Image (cartoon, rainbow, N blue to C red; front, side, top):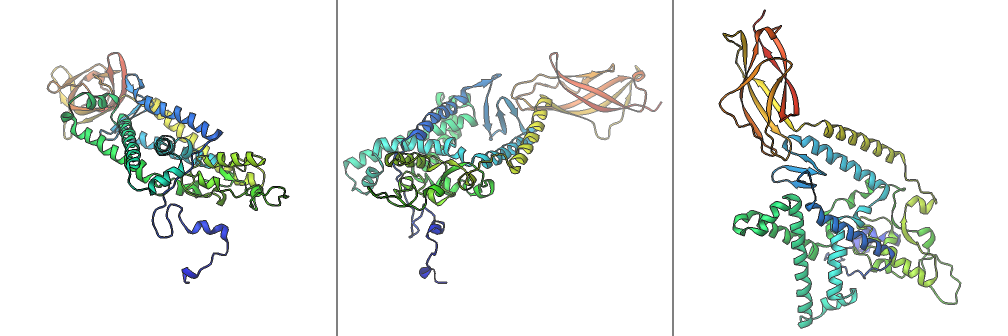
Length: 470
């Protein structure tokens, strides 16, 4: 078929034949969304204040002397709400991530892309910080277009320089914020206070992330959501007809038609003003239905409500609703799919909770030395030789001692080992376990040992002790 001669028979579906961010020549469409106003934007503004306050304050919050959240991928150390996950607990981290993925499935099935529009850092910073800076310096959408088309005069140079300088400063702050979650504020403060020459790699990381965030918010912008992020593409899999989304009520709005004074209206409530398109940061028409580019930012709700209020129609032509609520006038949130996801999430959280509660601060491996035999001592005691490794599963220094439980005997360490455990550290060595012969009733005896720090028992484990046959 000759595509150039192909005529689209259903104009309502023509939007599916192109990507809003690219024009017919294959070049990028730069969007200049109108400045949103309305109750939903006001709510998002206050929510953003709370989110940003929490985001910037959390690195400074400590629990038991440790950060509340830490994602140190460089040293493979993670702290999630005070729970330390070190190299020995990757299964715990994996279970946490699996639980998070199931939670995303459940949340998205019920509430759609509510996260994207309200709490995603990309949307929060782009629409509520960088976009606000742009409006403040360059003006509204119309003024921005005119400025970009204007020749490079003094006004344009000053405004562009001021805007991109502000972008760079905010990007630098975000880079420091990110590293505060990766390294912790204590390590980050060293980079600030101490000579840069002492922290070249980390300072280079700040510069690199500043450049990445600047590129993201100054150039990539909406394409971070529509091209880079895979979440939008998963909508069709994660959502169903009962999912709550920002949606256009086509049952009420169609057919569209301009409003005329002193003339009886036979069309639907949509007056085809295109204000919902004008305010959209990704350049889509919400009236075309669910689309990958929609991040549920609510700008179209406010724009439509403002128009409905002016023409005297009921608000809510565009609102948070579901497909079934529009067509069938029913809103069923708890479906078999939701129940299944809830059951899976409860199961995962139960297992995760049990594992966290039952987890010990140390993990000890005590094995009989390969090829070694028991030793019969002159004082009628028996000696076995073992190798040991003790792992510290916390982010604090531990000074452990190992004790025999339920049987008289003693432990003799080879050399003078330093058992002090650094945070997430490990020590290893060799130890002789000596037990009186009368305490051994058979050739193989199971011994119980415990790891203590002071009087606090951290862990209990077992090993096999070999003695002569009686």
